[in-house]
Structures are given as structure tokens and as C-alpha cells.
Amino acid sequence: MAAQRILVAEDDGPIRELVVHHLARDGFMAIEASDGSTALRIARDGTDLVVLDIGLPGLDGFEITRALRREGRQTPILILTARADEVDRVVGLELGADDYLTKPFSPREVVARVRAILRRSGSNHDPAPQVLHFGRLEIDEAAREVRIDGRDIGLKPREYSLLRVLADHIGVAMSREVLLQRVWGYDFDGDERTVDVHVRRLRKKLVEQHGLADCVQTLHGYGYKFLAG
Image 1 (tube, rainbow, N blue to C red):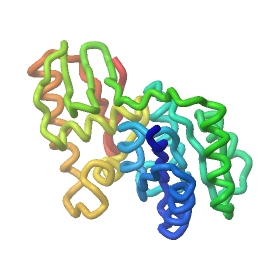
Image 2: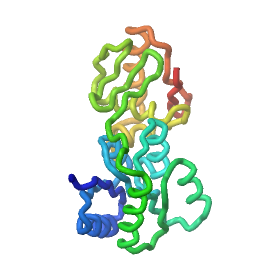
Image 3: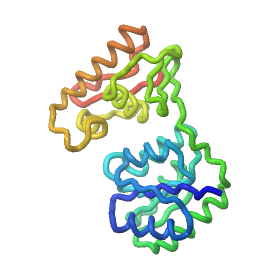
């Protein structure tokens, strides 16, 4: 029987390595992520359980949990948090997390919680990436394609990534700065108007060339918001 895949998403290197070491010693295949975008991508690729720190850079643990559950993925999630506030724990559970641990914790307790959650949830977790549907528009994570009426419209990599980030946060106002960080990366030193240029290209392909209703709302002086059709 293949080892169960456990994603450990934690930006604190020593903590992450300690948890990974104990999981591997107990027979799990531990996969590491140190930021939110990487964690979400790996979780979508398929894991048996996610050990998820709330305070990840980029996408935080709440955003990742919300995105996975909105897509219908039932992968079990164990939240790690340094926040003692009960509200944060309740929010995590209400978003769909299965359990939580407050730092500092014993790595053996993490392994014990992982085993308990897996026993409760069983082994059928739907690891396959899914296609997001918004009327005529489809976003296929596995193929990295955007299709209208079932046909790939040939978005460039940045255009695809920008649309995907917006679609992952339906109805959420996203600033140009945040979009730059999540699509171009924290090291990008270009102008925020780069986002505007790519949105115009998206609209040309989606709206002008294929007659799709405009699903990207401009928030003047701030950024953009994705509207489900």
C-alpha cells in the first residue's frame, strides 16, 4: 500500500522540518510548502491530508481552506495556529477545517492528530484537480487552460494565473498590489499598472473575441473583483 501523502504548509523552517521528520518516521510521505500559493497548488494536485499553518505568506490558511472547500475538495485539513484567540479557531473550523492545534505543540501530537483525522475521514478524498465552471467559461487547473464553450482560448501564462487568482476569490476585492504579489511574485519590481495591462488583454480575449459577459469588475483606485456569471 502506498504511503499516504501529507502536505505540511508552514513558513517556519525548523517547525516544518520537525513535523516532516516525525511524519516520515511514521511512514507518511510528507510534502513541504512554505507559502500559501505553493500550498494551494500542491493541495489541488492531490494529498491525503493538509497540515496548514494559518499565518502563511501570500494566501493565508483561511484563504486556502476556503478555496479548497469552495471547489468541493474534501481533503482533511489540520490547522496550526499561533493565535490563542478562540475566534480564529472557530473561523477555521467553520470554513471546513477538521481540527486545529495551537502553537507551541509536540510534533508527536501532530502525528497523532493526523492519524485520528485520517481514521475519521477514511481514504477517499478526491485528489484530482477540478474544472471551475462559470457559465460558458471553464478554468481547468490540471491542463492550465481557460475554455469558452469547451474550446481553449489560448491564454498566456500570466493571463491564466491572473484569471485563476481572481476566480479563486469570487466577489472579493483584490488590490493591484496583492495581485502583483500572487501572480508575479514578491520580487517583482514593476509598476502596478502591469495588472491593468493584463486585465485589458483578458477582457479582449474573453469579451471582445468570444462574446463572454465581463466577469472582471474594475474597482477604480484599488484593483479588481471576479464576478461569477
